[in-house]
Image (cartoon, rainbow, N blue to C red; front, side, top):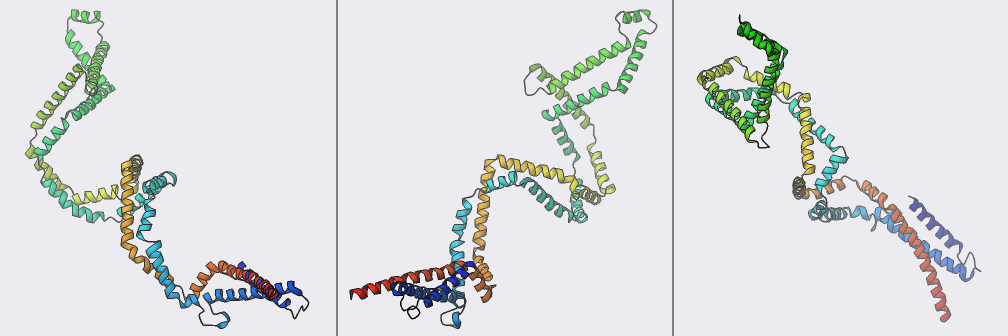
Length: 421
């Protein structure tokens, strides 16, 4: 708008000065006024010509319709050219992908995680998706559809295979060592408990009294050795603690080979295996299987149990939220630390972008044309004019200046030729 005012003032000034320097107004002006007069006249003509040209782009100057309103009359051609340029050149698939390939999408994602609260936003998004999914979950319908499958699998239950598999897993060296270590630690706590200590002490008193009987000699021997009931209990506790500690130490010494400890551990695990095998051999597998199937087929509402479990453990966000957040954090940390994952992600994203660009590139011309067609002639003219007006008004100013300079040059050239002639 400012350039429009400047251009109008320039044109008006040139016209007034051209009129003010006419020879009829100043008959004794001489060469200098003649030079100015020709310059201002040429500047006025140049300014008027450029005003006409600029105005003719958008509307009819002075009401002249011949070759004016260029934008409106050539709208279709201009639209076609814009559509072709944007879709086939500016937004060409190769051009888009060239820009995309210059970026490392994995690094952009890591930057998002580390500097733009990406972790929290990702966890929030995952929670929202899962919450939406789980809240709309028809637990009753799902449980009813799953219940027959579960009951069918229960009917196929083979007690012998299950027991054999359980024994095989349990007696595996790694598992048996852990189980026996846990058993020994439990035994240590039980033995040290006040209730067990009191029971052992009572048994020691009972055995001592039975040993002594009516023999004063036996009582004398025990007294001479200071084997009081409390002392016997202490010695027993020390021996038990020593045996348990040695067993636990042997069971936990797998990384550093020690022949003695290894033999102890092997004997313990063999004993555990034989004991478990003897115990399971006494189980009536057929009876166990029949009771198990009877329990599930008649007394347990499988569908109701499944529905209750889904409602308590799936639909309630506070149950699984911490686990989901921990899983998201774990996966993000793995991604940040793994260059191979990053490279794979980068290739995947770029391949997806290229596939999408190829698939939807044909829709770009229609989108651009739809946007252009949304403008009326007046709106389109206003839209274009407001964005190029300042530059176009500068053309008018430049036209006046150039016209004035050319006018003065021609005036000087005419004087020189006249003198020569």
